[in-house]
Image (cartoon, rainbow, N blue to C red; front, side, top):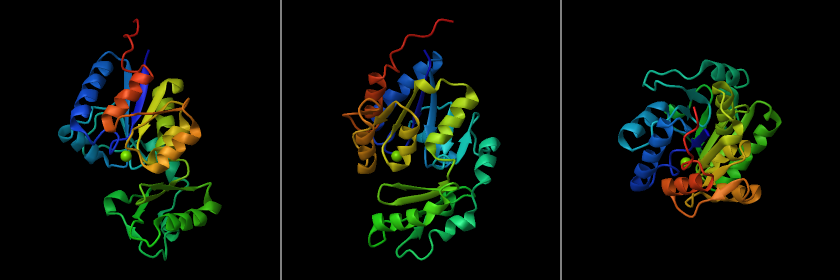
Length: 257
Ligand SMILES: [Mg+2]
């Protein structure tokens, strides 16, 4: 039976090339048999995902979700690829970049992320040079609260803060794609390592948290419970592979045709 696997890239697939090579070979096999639809869901830009496929051993995906769920790409993946317009238009309705920037005003130590990570639908900064990063993130959350119908705050790794459209995020982007492609939502397995992956675990009932995950995601895994989130004993791609074996994703027989 066909599974959908949606995995984060950095710290989830990457981190140990040997185990990534092994996992990528198994993905190749399952995808060739038509058993797995692979979604890569990342904070990276598309060019960096393509670079990762060419140079870092990332498996070839069926779809790519970039910039923390604000852009969705379908093949062929090229440097000139445009994100899916239906998704972009839906998010653009609720998001104004100048308003998003106003939520970040006057925070001591805040540094904007490079322009490539700031788009019409994503406003991103670093808070790790703030005197108290967690408190600074809370200030932004408090400011956004009354606008929660249009904006959301994603806080990751004690460093990265993203202001996204409320309807976006990795989890909702995967849901949109699952409906668009006609995949079975009950056979989606998600994998991640930090807070920007949290929305995937909230959206779908089968998750894998790798052993090197950040505390914020381990806390979420704890609260969702072992029936929804498998906590791998291994790190990086080896942890993803362990979780996929737990759910029986990699060893399924090819479907009858
Ligand atoms: Mg990550």
